[in-house]
Image (cartoon, rainbow, N blue to C red; front, side):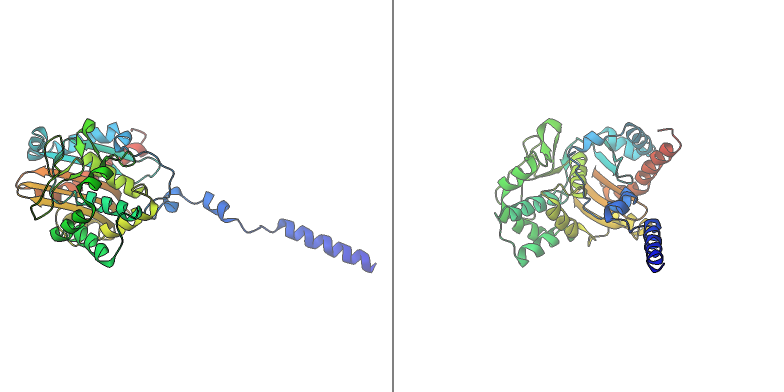
Length: 323
């Protein structure tokens, strides 16, 4: 009788264990977590191999962008005369990223915005051991981006050289300058100083950009594809929380105070440019603008809300099944 009782007790324990849910493995848990939550940290962990932002062009976003911008007579006139260029990338749904642009392959003088190309070339040189890292170099890269310091930028240009900058911009991995698509990012002159130059071949510009290629720069940065994940993360940290609060940032400070802003801008005479990666709880996108007009700073400041409106309208149409 004693042994029968023991046997029955053993069977009862086994039955209880079989009915008790086992702890889920991490892999099981992550399967039930939204992709948006998994990918919330920058740079995004992905196997994405799309480097050309044009491959993500969305026709509906494109049409609504043109319609919205043309509502303003000054903006429409600047667009028609190729004195204004815009690029936007909606990153709200990371499984359905959308790009649109106006005059986005029209290369323009971009003042200090192309300093991001110097940052990329410098990081590439550090990664390949062509440049020895130091506290001075790290400080110069931060000054170059956050405060747009010309002296720090010139020191970085002197360290890496024009040939290195051009090589990185033209590399198949990044393809940020290409004559066949209107050029792109270029730095071929020191900032605030003389010396030799290496102007780009299409328009003989010293500091140039297209909104298409600047969007591509940020998109590759988001995806961890600028050099590699580690270097992309380092560049993001340098570009985060800009010290200058004008143009895009002037508006973003008001409407998106909780968002992280990664940014580089530029101004010289009538040429005004800005670029920003906005990454927050309610908004995730890239916006870029190049303006050749004396009111460029204000125009860029005023562009943020309409551009957000364009992206929101497309998302609304998708939810309604109309896009």
